Image (tube, rainbow, N blue to C red):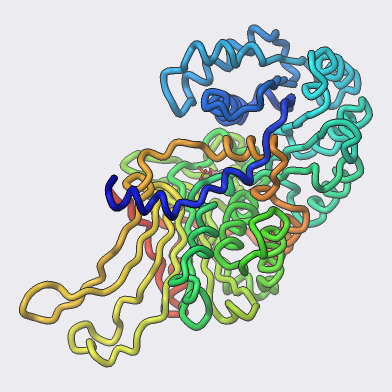
Length: 519
Ligand code: BG6
């Protein structure tokens, strides 16, 4: 055994024992004909089954309007799996065993009779757990979430509180379009289910690298000590995407970058980066701390929006050598649309740990690369020793958490350039998931579906988290209300957003660091 192997054995803490056993259950997918089901949900469930993570018995029921039989739906899913599975080719023996547990129920989500039919199908399953432990995955239009819950309740498939078995609702985003609609939806859902039965999904929380933020912060003493306003100069979170809006123009016209990415994924990452240590790793203490830090984020006054938030929309350009049309030319997009495809903002967390530390967030479509990362930049040293070599500004230390791709963490610090002179240069220490743990394969949806079946809500968003996030987003939208985009807010596809986004940081002597794709 090598030294490292021995070390691994000594220090690897296995937390698997805390994972609850997953009981036999039925998963009902509303919106079964949709993209999410084919691309993410079925591949995730198939892989869980292949990896022997699914409960000892289960059924999957697809519920949608299109006429299909069990056999024809299974055929479609097999095709989708061939395309979207993370491990190819599809293992046909595993698939046959999996497909035998997959059923289809034709029905309109707004038709009471369809729920009777669904109840009939579920009632025909052979064992009580398959009939009583029910996970309803609502991958449908948000306006239908409440209605589906009500109908499920009326046919006794959804009980508020578990008299028999358990029933849970998994809710896809968008969870409302502002605070008022999110609160109304929360209210509606909790008429038919307890908050503990509602699992609001944010697939960023299913990513290994996002889960690693808490592990990294709270299992290492050297960084946590510096994780505060005394040592941190500022924080940058970038979630950039090369893709435009593609076929999702209709949805995106209602959402925009702020609602699509900031309200959920980016504020969740920010909460994990800035929250206080929870008292335990259970769902509620973690979510309590996230709520606390979200509530400490200063809401934007209307006049601050113009100073601290930049929005943008892509025009024609070229991304990675491929020419791209403008957002306004995308399918189902208004040719005079003022919807933002880019947003950059500066905020403050007004609490003891972070007061006065600028936190910059940015996200956009049609940017030069797809990359998500968090950069914590530390305060510079008093540069009394090296001013002659490097001028007044020495490169400051920075820690970058690369969420995707090239998952890993890098620490940047200054080193002496070898030689007789005294040159200084920033260098990096890297930790890469690939090198350390081998090819990393599991998908966010696998983890999230397994947790939802097991009743572990840690990686799901609680009602008050959603509401806090909407308060922040609404305070920005209030400053945009009725104000169209001006020329300075457009950016060419393939650039890093409007110039204004760079000026936002320059005002405080900062600059965006573009994510590096490490080879
Ligand atoms: C989704 C957004 O929630 O996240 C999409 O609706 C976005 O617009 C996607 O492209 C990004 O997810 P990922 O995992 O590819 O970073």
